[in-house]
Length: 310
Image 1 (tube, rainbow, N blue to C red):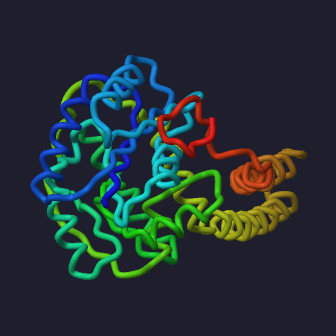
Image 2 (tube, rainbow, N blue to C red):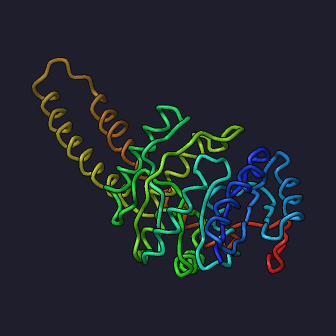
């Protein structure tokens, strides 16, 4: 059996068309399937559409969160309850064409535990979004000690053994594409052209993108901490040279103003680098704090999965 995990956030108009397209692919491959829709606190009629769809089709499972917990958490919940030997992760907006699942599945039969879809074209997205995504993944690859594929999202097929390892990772701030790369096993890709949304507006705002980027960086790199340390040495060196310049000004310059040097040295250099360092360290400490609280990753409001806790 193959499980398809589909996070949902305000996708009422896309749920039914996406289900039909997914079913056509599964029928073509002659696969037993289950669809796990994770409703991440949608404000529209997505919950109603999902419940109606589940009544009409026995292969539809749904999970309603008590509020919006975020895309990565929604995918994680789907993985927690997926029962298939292989699991596909795909969004509901149609940008990742379900028809590509056939290529992913056939490639996985060659002995790969992970087959991810790599974009060679992105339709319907602004230049700014394309540019920021492009450079973020390339920078992330340079500052981490793992190889996170560029031009990819969460659209992929993964083996049961990979799913089991992901479920055992307890961190609160999920960055699944990085975690899957970290796990290892045999991984490869297929290329595809990303489409426009079928309908509606994306819920992935720039604010969420920034938060997602921070999760990726802090989860897989201590590079910001190294930058803070190097900056400290740099500013200390500049400050030392400014002290020498101040002493020279005091004894050899006629225009020296008492108090100017101490303000410049302490306020600009020492104070600035301390704030930068404290801010970076605070990001890491905040994530440590979230993990040691022991709170559940998500709360389920309702579900038609028998063993899903409410």
